[in-house]
Length: 355
Ligand SMILES: CNc1ncnc2c1ncn2[C@@H]1O[C@H](COP(=O)(O)O)[C@@H](O)[C@H]1O
Ligand SMILES: [Zn+2]
Image (cartoon, rainbow, N blue to C red):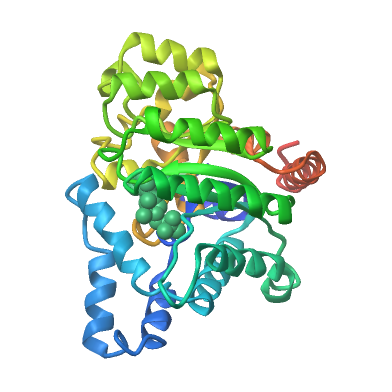
């Protein structure tokens, strides 16, 4: 396919997004509107300062983490959380995403919103999707609730408890838990993985941010934990600060990896797209899901991530369709939903003359 064909093909592709943090995915328009609705931030200079710092070029992973505090400054009540969720879902649907798993860290604002009310605001908006997604659009949306490893074990325990309650109340929407946050923080193996086991026992799927930075002991324990999916997986391969042993453990686990190309390069955990560890997954046919991570912070879309993968690793139209197939299998969708997504993909392939 030539360049312009790749771009339009990636836009048309019925894509599957499995790794998208709500507050990292806010578009500039959404940020602007949420600022205007916030009396403390509604002046032009404050709005412009906030938005430009949200998109400021990162020089490190640390700098990236400071950006989420900016988004958190505007999603401070249920109405703002609903607006953020509605806009992010609409953005993905407009980008041709057919299936979306949003993940977000339950957050309380004293006197305004409890963690449960935060979660309810997201769930209510997901339930409301048919009312705001255009008639010619189709998107299935699920929710994972996150534990931020920077927070205390008590916070982590509370988030897992809230996730179990939310899953019991909305099993078709709240499908999993995610471990994320600054990888330099927290004692995950001792304080957090045991909590995730409680979530697993109650029927929630497990997604772990893994090996964003080198940490042999933690990565080994995470690989042995047999999560349903892993995110990033940057420092597993020996060429990126991992070891042969970790790499073998990872391959043997056959755990699907959520691959975030632009996030890794803009956070400088991977030096270039050409050097990205996706090359090894392609070579070894290890399952992966091309993902955005934080489309707002990194000014990307899922179509652009597919286009990047296609151009960097010379992937054909059929190989891009196979990426969607792998993501469907790795998703936390129900069996019927997976069948529906697979039949949508085969109808797409027929229409594109690929079947
Ligand atoms: C860049 N790579 C990353 N690595 C680890 N955690 C990340 C992340 N990108 C985002 N988050 C996690 O997602 C939260 C923002 O969304 P929510 O407030 O939950 O909706 C961040 O605070 C961080 O904990
Ligand atoms: Zn992430």
